Structures are given as structure tokens and as C-alpha cells.
Image 1 (cartoon, helix red, strand yellow):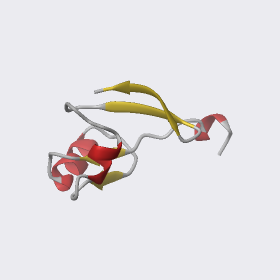
Image 2 (cartoon, one colour):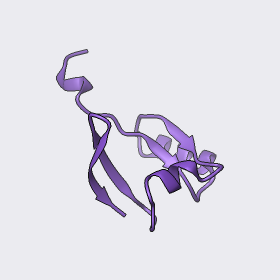
Image 3 (cartoon, helix red, strand yellow):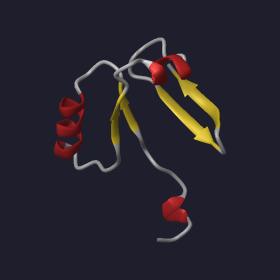
Length: 68
């Protein structure tokens, strides 16, 4: 794997939909990447999600772009 291939990763965190629903959608759309469930709301609170969908770009451990 080259450096360019490692430059970005997409992680999906389900905060409203059932995780299996999202995994099935990803398979249908031929997308790849992990899908996690935020069952206790910890990620939603940590990222201060106010609307769905929300998108965050994290660089070196810090949010550099947020769309929520």
C-alpha cells in the first residue's frame, strides 16, 4: 500500500439508523470501510452532532472541518 492510499479513510458511525441497515446500504453501493454503532451516544456527544447526516474531517487528531 502506498502513502497516497493511506492518506484518507472513511469511518461510518450510526447514531440513528440500525447498523445492519447501514452495512447493507454500503454493500449495495460497493463502499468499503468500517461501520460502527453509537449505541450509548458517546460519539454523538463528543462530536457535538446537531443534525444528521454529519461529516467531519479529522487531521492529526483534530477536527479541521465539520458539517453538521
